[in-house]
View 1: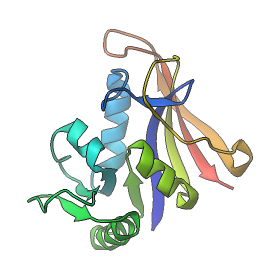
View 2: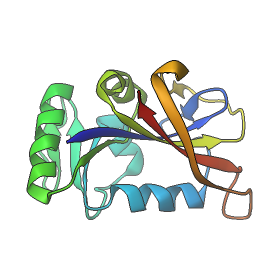
View 3: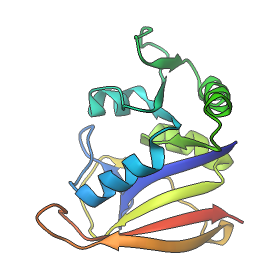
View 4: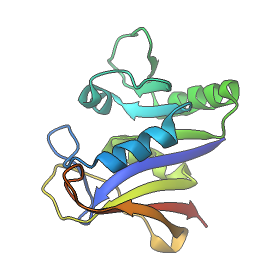
Length: 166
């Protein structure tokens, strides 16, 4: 089992604004779907609420101390419980990755144990109120795996990277 983070960050570390993504990049959303489909995904309650629905073809594990049990979702009362539920789900699905998909507090709690980050580096500085925690570059190897140009579907250009913990 591998804990993998999926995140898109602006140059200034912003990942969100007012409970939503701070940009619209269609190619990033397609990459997100391709990476996470068929896997367990862990997210915080506010991230779930910003999405507004269960992500299809994934086991959705929501970390919340207050959210009631909800059909089609797995509610975890702690990060530790979410990781155990994710581990069990990954074994059941016969997949290696558990994907952590946000938000900022969930990223901060799981970054120390994550072994991979699927990073979309958005080529912009944007205003926002949620940031990805700082990472130590010396702790990670960074490999480019593509990108997207600015277009009518992509508000900003971006690069796609995989970071592996050293």
